[in-house]
Image 1 (cartoon, rainbow, N blue to C red):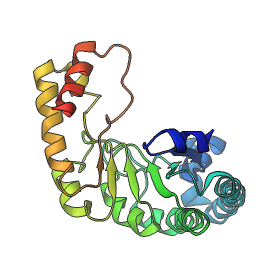
Image 2 (image 1 turned 180 degrees about the vertical axis):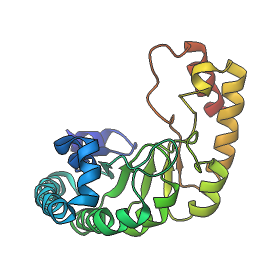
Image 3 (image 1 turned 60 degrees about the horizontal axis):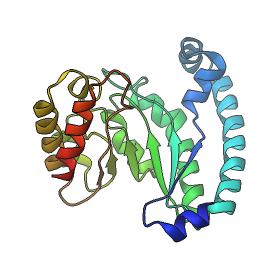
Length: 226
């Protein structure tokens, strides 16, 4: 199927691998327990993370072997942010998660031609330098309504080092509550900030929910096309 996509389309082909580390710890232990574990039982946490890494590297090996020379982008997911800042301190991220994220990114780049995409919601501004050093090429969804995630700030500080995939329209507030003209103005402004010099893929910040006014969705696409 992937070869057929490549032969019949010039669009980028993306495959989702998941391979989360922090999120998987939360899924297994529940978030409240895992956050306590990180501080109270760091040795056991590292043992768990190493077991996850063994599983993830096996998965990545299969993906790279099967489609690594055809697919353009591999998508990881590991939500690291809240509306107000990172879920953990940068120090904790650098100690436990950054080295493992780097291993995953390095593996993909060594064994395939794919670029590496990270989906992480929330305010991750304080972690972006570390995400870049870990090897991520693309960041998503760029939650511009979260603290420190203003488009101007992100583009100025990191626009030369990472691609922003998202941030085109705030689904939580503007697309949901704004008028069509407010949506258009909002979208135009974000494109004008993010697009210069490349490194921007237009997308909404999050999924568009069913109660968003259809005229606002149309206005968003009209602004993009214009």
